[in-house]
Image (tube, rainbow, N blue to C red; front, side):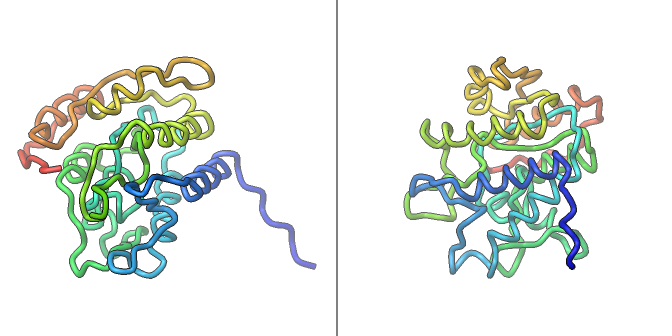
Length: 233
């Protein structure tokens, strides 16, 4: 007789339900579901499954963060191919890590914004990263582009964000990274109450890297990195 499956802990069960929600989401044509879909030219075999597993591993390692850094959406050089917010293949999926690349590109994708955020956070476990829209908005017909999400897409993302906070991180304080997340969080509620947004940080892209570093360092009590690389997107 086979043994019954080991019961999942509530936090791990919540992660699985969140990933299932992300995977099932029916989105507009200009929004790529990175947790379900694969493009035959851009994605390695089983790419979406790799991204789901990357996200699973990432969230499991962050069970009780103090802050949630909420960005806009995955970029095509970053979370589009890792499944993990504010990361890229080069820095997250390096040889020997527990994370897998999902692109067919010979060289791992590298995103400046991801580099700035990862340099600031390092190996901290008191910050979890997420996005207002956890899928990849792009220009119509151009998968390797980035586009700011429209109101409809943000609405889909807020449904996932509500589950993210209610089920996984009800005690975690929100930090908006950029103006779009800050505006979206203005009327956002968790368990019927307005969410506590403790800070709004400058987004690292478009000349905001230095200011982001300084603001994040002040919030986290860290020393800002001296690297002045400015992200393009």
